[in-house]
Length: 336
Image 1 (cartoon, helix red, strand yellow):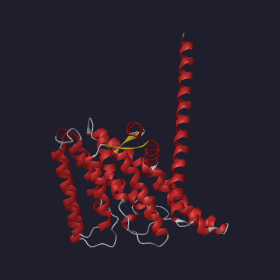
Image 2 (cartoon, rainbow, N blue to C red; image 1 turned 180 degrees about the vertical axis):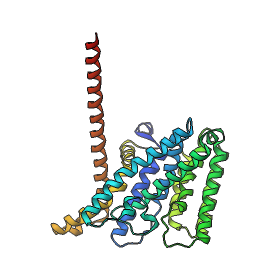
Image 3 (cartoon, rainbow, N blue to C red; image 1 turned 90 degrees about the vertical axis):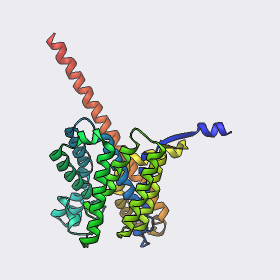
Image 4 (cartoon, helix red, strand yellow; image 1 turned 90 degrees about the horizontal axis):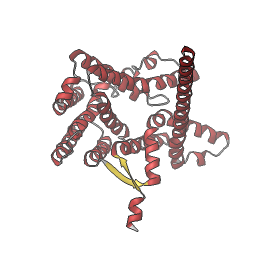
């Protein structure tokens, strides 16, 4: 029996698992806010920033600074373009236009969150701009490749110092600013460096102490307690496990959600709004607005949208490739 159970388990890469669980946590928190309940379970976006930092380091820190800059801008483009499209659509729908939102700088002038958390996208884009300037100016990639632990540790210490200094001496009503989140993203770089080639007990203990000490310092500086608890939970998962075995159906669901993370992030609030309007329209609001049902559809519909867009793009690329291949064969035969 145990052999059959073991055979039905599928190992899920821990970063993918954390991504899936973190975006579910984001949806749960927003459902609670939507129903006027305290936030409580915050921290999903902090976990997403940590995983994004790890994945960025994996793909960006190769070859040369030019490769790193290309990865930074590719990442920015993938999240900025759909966000810009949604921002324009929302502006047209509401007849309210903000050049700050269109320029991705509204997080410096307002704490208002529109139809989706645009501030998160703005922070990522702004961080990518700053990182690009630093890497380009000082040709940092060769240094990161030569001594990844040293330079990611220095970058993390600097970003954490900037956060603590800002909280202590730079009073502001706007807390959704890039320098207050840079430490979270760069912590992912340090995770990458420490676990890249040597997932030893020593390195895991160093990362654990770094994570817990950072959480303590950030809490003392006024960081949200629940966010830090969630970040520590997800961070410890990333440190101590490379993969986690899950039942096959659950593993497939988690992986789908993980791949659709950005679509869920962008559109789940629109799903909530549509559900409420349908509930009023057909006089079934108490049923449709059930929190569990809202969470289910807030994850399901964006995931289906991601699957549709992905399948459409793959089909388009295949048709384009087939067309180019046929054209190449035709031209080759004509030359003969």
